[in-house]
Image (cartoon, rainbow, N blue to C red; front, side, top):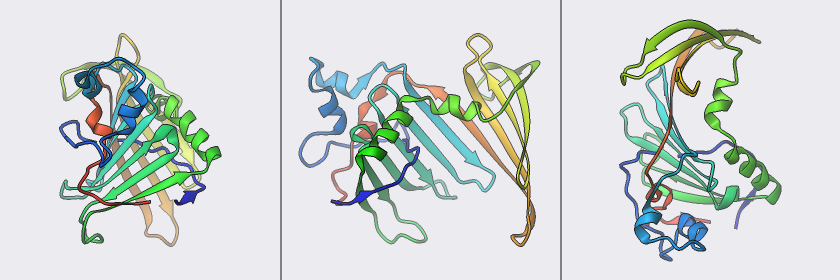
Amino acid sequence: MKKIFMTGAIALSVLSLSVTANASGQTDYALAKAINTQTDAQLHAEQNPEMEYIKITRSNRLYEEIWHDRTNLFGRTDTYQIDGKIEQSQYLLSGGQRQVTIKYPSINVVRTFGKVDHFDPKVAVVNQNALKNSYIEQMAAEFTWKDTGEIYVLPDGKKSRKKTATKTIANGVVTSTLYVDPATNFPLQQEVTWDTVTPGQGGHHITHETREFKRLQGVYYSLFMLPTNITLNE
């Protein structure tokens, strides 16, 4: 059993992904819900207003998807290669105590493999507290916003109110635009641009990322179940 002393905001992947329970026939979600009198169907799909979804797309065309369950304290993050194929899935389970990382074939990985890390109890508490908080609200709170008064229609057709912000960092400037729901002020999308100068590392750089935010309903718990066809090294 490997114990590591580190922190990390770890989170989740594609809703269409369907995987089965682990070899013991149990999952962290099933174990967490065992005290309730729910049917198997309810264990697989349930209304959960505290489930967050974040998709981050970067200017180098790499992207990641995050699922964050603030109620049951589960997380998963999937990262993708430039061709859109999944590169890695990382799960935070057991209330922040257990991290499962599955790496899929890529330029640097020949075959799929998985590993499990068990966190020190103090780190697990830090992870638990992070899982209780809203990742979306934390990302929006990185800036002090100015409301432009503009109404902007997002690509999915939703109307939003537009806010802007600029802040100075050690090696440059970061600008951001935030689109929020006009009625609830909930963040729907964020654009962030870093304009930096790094001496000795290519000089001037401009990088950009788009963050899409959602609260999900009717989430399938199979999202947090581990594939049975992958051997995990613990």
